[in-house]
Length: 175
Ligand SMILES: [Zn+2]
Image (cartoon, rainbow, N blue to C red; front, side):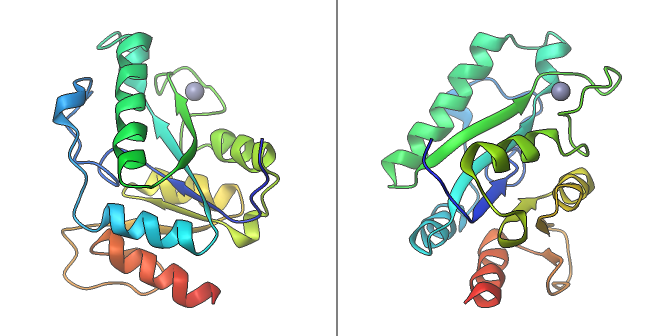
């Protein structure tokens, strides 16, 4: 694999795309406003982009691995159509009671991504909507930002109302 010192680890559902619980229909993929230009800006600034997603719908047998893969490919291909390259997608198929090391808030998938790309956690970021995303990011040593559209005003350096504001913070911090 290519080496990327700086990774952006991205949660998928309710961070990049509007979450429909246990989404498995590619035609329903809907990126939030600001996500695609934000990812393009991060990519242009030299960050490698990876997706880190809990998909317990697989364990719960709400959809199978094959339909998950269709969704994953559709997300990656739609981004590629907009010249945004996702280096890899890491997913946890397990349920919350299975005790796996990969389901966020555990950091297993992030640690794997860091290892796979030879990244420096201290130069990397996690962006997600859930507390478990931030917890996983911090456990892996990444700076971590949360997106919360319901927020009245941003909590600088921690929580942002939309993706593009989080991206602006990253670019300001690192340059
Ligand atoms: Zn897992």
